[in-house]
Length: 355
Image (cartoon, rainbow, N blue to C red; front, side, top):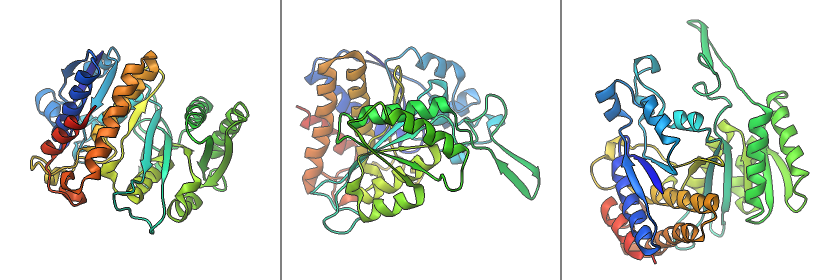
C-alpha cells in the first residue's frame, strides 16, 4: 500500500509526525506493508516552486492508495494568480473526494461543552466538491465576482449528481450504524438549490426502507445539536452547511482537536484533521495530534473496506482504540485538555498502546 504524505503548514508537520508514529506501530502490529512518499505543499512548496500545490503532485496522488494531508494556512496564502492554491480544495476536486466524513462523539471520561448528561455519537456527511465555495464550483473562472467596488456576488452550485452520491453514501453509512439519516437544508429560502438537493436525497431514501429518514432546516439543526444531539445518527448536508455543523458538533462533543476526518470517494481517500494550522503554536510541541491520528485511522479503515481487507480494518480500529486508551488517563493527555504531554510524547504514547 502506497501513501502520499503532505505535512503542509503550521502544526501540520508535528501532528502528521505523531500520526505517522501511530500508523507505523499499527503496521508493525498487523503486518501491513506500507510505503510512504513525502511531498511538499503549502508555504514550503510556494517558496520552492511558486505554488502551494503543484499540479504534478496532485496528478501523482491519484496513483496512491491513500493520502495524508496536514493542516494548511490557506487564509495566509497569496491570491491564486500568485500561487496561493487552496490545497485542501484542490485535492477534493482533483481526486473527486465528494464525501467529507466528520464524526463527532463524546467520551465519558472527557469534559464536553454540553450540559451534564448530554451525549453525542454522530457523523456528518458533507458534500465537498460544490456548493457555495467559490474555488470549486466552476470549471473555468471563479464562483464570486464584484461587478462594482460596492457589490459582490457569489454563486451556489448544486447538482443532482453530487446530491445523489452524498445521499447514497449517507444511507450506506447509516446501515452500518443506528440506521437513521437526517438531511439538512434551508428549503424555505433556497427553493431551487436545496429543492434539487432534497429531491435527490428523498429518491435515495426510498431505496433504504430500513433507515429512518427525516429532514431539518439548518438553523433548527443547530438548536437540536445543542439541546438533544442524541437524536442524530448520520447527517447529510451540502458543503457550506456541513462545514459549519461539523465544527459545532465537534466542539460541543469536547474539542475540534478530538475528531477525525477524511475526504473520500469510492476510489480515493485523504486523511485530514478537522482543525486549522494554528501557526501561533507551530514548532512548540504543544499541539494536540488526536484529530490527525484519528483521521489516519479512518483512512486505514477506508482502505480496509475498499480492498475487503479485514486486517486493515482491524489496524484502523486498533489505532482508534489506542487513542481512547491514552485519553482516558488524565496523565497522558495533551495540555489543551488538562494533561502534560506534548505532541510528540502523545503520539508515542498512542503508538505504544496499539495492540
